[in-house]
Length: 363
Image (cartoon, rainbow, N blue to C red; front, top):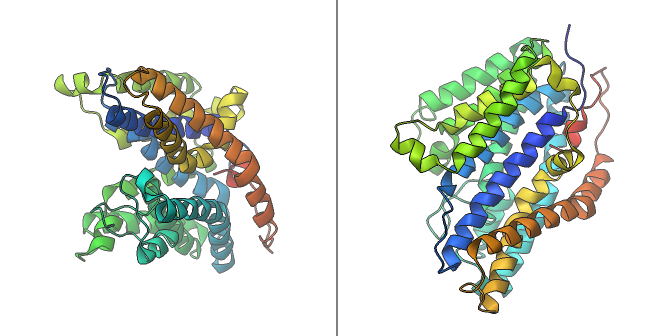
């Protein structure tokens, strides 16, 4: 007996948490850069665990929303759904940044408009930019390069009979990482063979267990929240933990966190606070739009010479508030209408399939 398709609210809350962690990391970096006032902000580099959470969740959701589907038609439908879910809004923000780079380059740190790099950014082709970084024009789009890579491989595996999908996915990704892309060299081989891609596989395995009906006892769900809270608290003292010899392995932490919060029986029907679900729904918009909010706030602070007057934590809180509010507004006035419009282009599958998951519309 397989698990029914329905909305898992703790999963959405985790997406909102992941988006907030990435936002906090970038906000702290920017405040530290512009403010001459010292403030104790901890080691914000480890807030990038938000990406690990996103990747593991992505693996889970792809299995969750494609369960029971296989064949060439299913693979084409899957890929088309992912493209219309990811591409339009990403192209929008990339185009906005390209216009800024063309007409207001002085407000940007590293980004600059170079036609070939712009095209590579649009089509998710990894490259080393003019600043020497392995990033697209919209810097945080590097994670989407991995997402699209995973989607393509997952779609190809969907062509196989359903019982072989996860096996093929596992063999491919493990082989790619273990052999360093089969011994190939170059930017693409290096990018696609990094161990971070195994986070998608870990999430896929969690999704497989979930859909097969394998569940953890309910007490694991509360242990998951306790574990998540402990991880968030530990982020403030990462340097101290490292000095004490405590290893902070982000991928493993993300996998444990998601397994504990998704696999227990209680997770399926657990209702989260409305604001946390909204944050999860808007997480993609928050992720893509927050660099613009950060830039706007910091430019305003610098323009009025307030960086040495306003306390860094006030600048940080202002950035977070503007980014979150702006991301939610962008979700409702841009992302959601775009999704509604492009949904009309999705052809219904001819073979019976499980009911579409609400997560597929938002993730």
